[in-house]
Each structure stands twice: as C-alpha cells, then as structure tokens.
Length: 287
Image 1 (cartoon, rainbow, N blue to C red):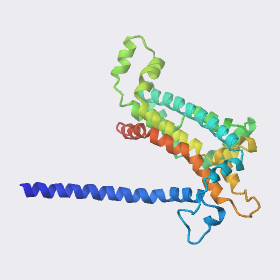
Image 2 (image 1 turned 45 degrees about the vertical axis):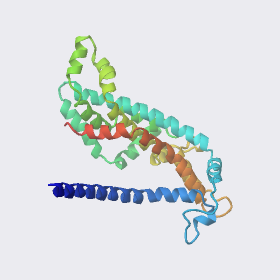
Image 3 (image 1 turned 90 degrees about the vertical axis):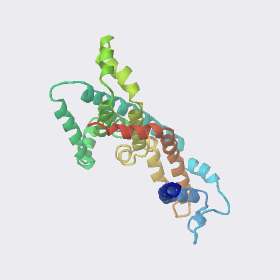
Image 4 (image 1 turned 120 degrees about the horizontal axis):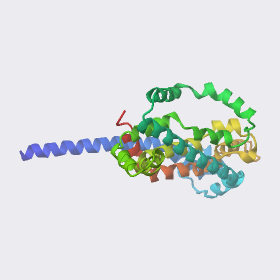
C-alpha cells in the first residue's frame, strides 16, 4: 500500500511539474517580444542593427525614455487618449449594462427576438459600416473631433450586452422581488442591486473597453486629422517618420515610447485580473 501511495504521489508530482513546465515555456515564448522591445529601448540606434544583437547593451540608455517623450507632444496625445478612453469606458459600461438588464430581468413582448437581432449584429463586419458611418459623421460635422469615437459607446455594444446579460441571469430573482416589496422601482433595482452584484462582469467589460480604446489606431486614423487631436497610437505612427537627420527611423526611441504606452494596459490587467477571470467564467454559465 505504501508503495502504491508513493507511486501515485510521484505521478501527481510529475503531472504537476510537466504542466507547469509547459506553462512556463509558453510564458517565456510570449514574453520574448516584450523583452526584445525593452532591450531595444535601452540601446543606441547603432546597437539596434548590430550583428549579433546584444540583448543586454554595454551601456543602458535610460535617457531614451526622456528623448521619446520629448520627441513628440506626448503630454497632449496622452491627454487626448485619456479623455476618449474615460468617456468610452463610462458610456460602454452604462449603456451595455442597462440594455443587458432589460434583456435579462424584464419581461416584454418580443424580448428574445430583439436580443437575437442584437447578437446578430456581431456578425456584421466593421468594414461594411465604415463608409456609411464616416459619411454620417461628416454630415454632422463631427470629423476631426472626438465625438465619432465617443458617442457610439453610449449606444451599447452587442458583445458586452451578451456578456453582461449572461452574468445578470445568474443573479437570483428573489433579490428583485424583495426590492419590489420595499418599494424599489426597476431603475433602482438596476442601480442598487444588479450593478453592485455584478462587479466581476463590469470589471471585465471595463477592461475590454479600456484596452480596445487605448490601443485603437484605426478609428482615430480615420476621424482625427489635426495633429493637436491625435492620440498616443497616432503619435507612435508619427514617430516612424522622425529620422532626425539620420535617414533611419529611431527604433530605439519608438520602442521606448511603445513601452510607455503599454504600461497602463499591463497595470490595469494585473489590478483587475481577479475580477476579470471571474467575470469571464461566470458570464458563460447560464444561457
């Protein structure tokens, strides 16, 4: 018996070591591009093209980060990006959660058909609506303003509506009935009961919305023409043309600026990781 128990323990340890070994190996593979960017950001321009490439430069040029920030109006672009991201975050969470609340907690005629129609819009490629949307925003005089990037967020997103609806369905309806007995209306139930109980799902939606808006390059490229309205992603694209008399893109400064832009993404993910994982898991439990 002791021998069998020892063999079972060894097999369990072997499986544990094997799975974690695979995960560590995959983690290293996925971390290589990030480590390469960090290494390049500490080189000089000649060191970037050295053969062979030195992962650890002889001289760590931390001044590259200062030069990258001063090369473009980084502060202005950061302010524009923060304004757009915060507004989109608020609009997405409020509108998507309100629509999801109606689909999950309210009973009305044609509810399921409307929800199916809402989900069906996810199959419509963005390239199909790109030109009509641009024409519409152009006629409204919104081109070269933040409005085309912000206003659509206040009309909900089918994916976020679906995710939040699935989570709301896991909340017992007894909470709604108890609140109605105390005189609470539908909006009060939504605001005081459903939203506080849905923090993991709301954190997931907020994280997705933040990442999608902060890293968005295509929409600002279409709608923002003035340099003073540019976002950080457009600023990074402009840095490719900053040759500074060398005739070569300053790749070490570009990588330094890219890492600075990535910092909020990394910090936010680790801060909201617990709620993010829970929201993804629970959101798919009930259909």
